[in-house]
Amino acid sequence: MNDINYFSSTIINYLKEIKKKKHIKKTFLVTFPHKAHFVKKGKKSIYRLNVSDIVDQVVKEKKEITHVNFSKLVQEIFSQESNFNPNDIFKKDNIHLNSVSHAKIFINGILVELDKFFINN
Image 1 (cartoon, rainbow, N blue to C red):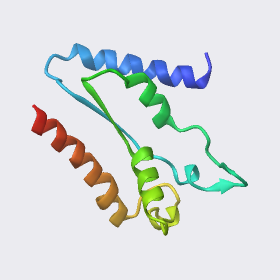
Image 2 (cartoon, helix red, strand yellow):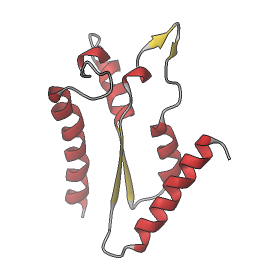
Image 3 (tube, rainbow, N blue to C red):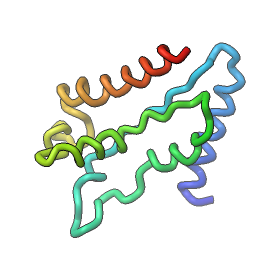
Image 4 (cartoon, rainbow, N blue to C red):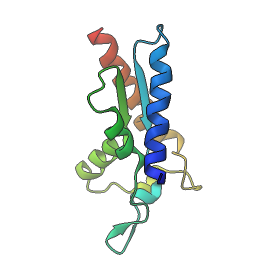
């Protein structure tokens, strides 16, 4: 079994376990890209595999699961704002979001998805 299949099967097994819990009506899976997904070496990103894509494949057509895919959200910001620079949203460790981006992008993005859920239910 390769690493991608292992990761996929781990998600599937996790979701099966959650489904057994009758008190859980909705599951939100949150993924966020690493800075290296935006940094290019030549024409290619340093990180070419994004776990968000794997999660998308696993949860598609599962209405009880919402994937909050920040790779797509950040990509939308990147395409809409010509002066967007990934260096501006990450801390110096290049892994974690700085506090402003954490609030504006991450927390706000999750709250938007929760709001959609509560409005529709």
